[in-house]
Amino acid sequence: MTAKSLVLLHGWALNLRVFDALVTRLDAWSKRADGVPLAISRLDLPGHGRALEPAAIHHHDAACGWDIGLTAAHLLQQMPPRCVLLGWSLGAKLAMEIAAQAPERIAGLVLVSPTPRFAIAADWPYGAAPEVLDALAGHLRDDYRRTISEFLGLQVRGSAHAQETLASLRAALLAQGECSPEVLLRSLKLLHKVDQRPRLPLIQSPTLVIAGQYDRVVHPRASQALAELIRGARFEEIPRCGHAPFLSHAHEFCGLLEDFLRGLAP
Image (tube, rainbow, N blue to C red; front, side, top):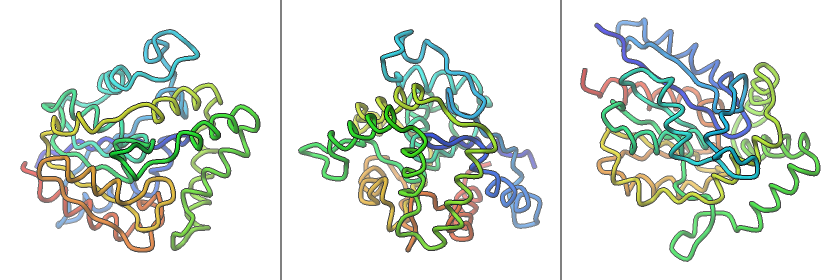
């Protein structure tokens, strides 16, 4: 049986090493009789880990935020001709844009802790207040390392196995390299300004949306509302789970992912 290509996109401030344990687990499953053969690849987002940040994705203006369409197109150039695409947090936002931009390239879409809009609005009660996002940008400028440390802690707050999950996030950050504050500010501006709700009906691939019950970064109702805007999407919420379910609840997460991969047409 031909192996399915599976591409993984990580979240803001992290890098591809955050998926180490998930890749090990999926690789073992893919070799079992009940598994699906997989060819797994993972990409560092621009300026994260060991990836360069092309000036084109922020229009050659260092003060400008990432353009989501250009950033998605940059990642598409590094992906197989057709694949299952898994994105987590910021990676999920980019995965949604990729699936809307090039539906023929995406055989299946897995969105982990996603939201189409980070900022609150009159018709979107699940986001953060603009002043919260502005304060995060200010903290990045004033004390970069403390801000990133606090953000990692926020991702595991309320979750079972919080300390083990936090240790995994910190280990990934050290293993592949930190982002510069400038890259984080430019990618944060993308999170601040982009509303993807009008793009979601363009997604044509089978879609699985996974949220954590106690996620303190993205409200699980935001992920559920997102799933309702994608035709045929399946929504799953993992109990007692924070923002990184593939780390804190690997067994439950992989069960959902493996079931989804089995169900995709050959």
